[in-house]
Amino acid sequence: MSIGRSPVRAEQKERTRLALIAEARRLFAARGYADVGLSEITAAAGVTKGALYHQFDGKVALFRAVLEAVHREIADRVVAAAEGDPWAAFVAGCQAFLTATTDPALQRILLVDGPAVLGWAEWRAFDEATSAFHLEEALTGLMRLGLLPERPAAPLTRLLSGAMNEAALWLATEPSALDDTRRALTELLESLRCR
Image 1 (cartoon, helix red, strand yellow):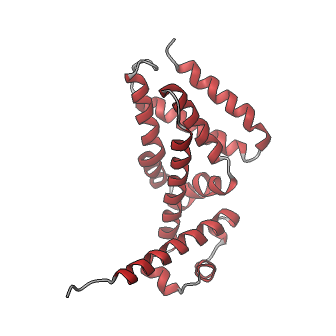
Image 2 (cartoon, rainbow, N blue to C red; image 1 turned 180 degrees about the vertical axis):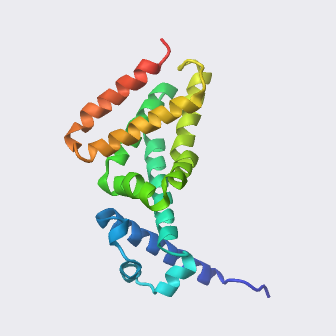
Image 3 (cartoon, helix red, strand yellow; image 1 turned 120 degrees about the horizontal axis):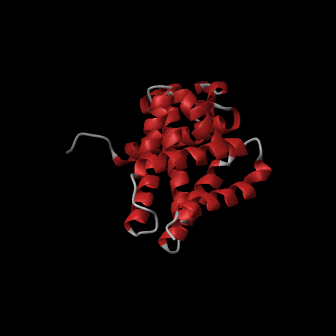
């Protein structure tokens, strides 16, 4: 007989974890990290504070899990949009990223509360390991194919990432400018392409 968790207990633990992340995400998106308490999250998830602390060591750790889920969702949207030849897939992926980050719920968690809650250095490291990593990978692949001039990919990655993040924040106050911003992004990307 093995000692350890039963499959039922492990499934229950995972259901609890997912419920906490889902409810925290919903509440953080609606009102922001600072205006949501742990009691409210646990009540919405139908669990006790003890269950929360069994999963996470506090509100910041729960927020980190929410941020990871948001990054995964955005990555899934980018991958789903990135179809066609390599250049078209790259442009479509960048457009999908920009469009996804203009979703107020994702934007607040990713670009507003993320740096404020985790601190700039941790947020940057998190972004580097997710969005920036995939963007740099795509740029390097395009350079290998001769679609972009050979150059160090890291600076271009940071410039494009910064431009798209800033555009998403600006679009929060100017949502009617999404189409114009998408056109400008396409023109910017096309200006980098080898002819």
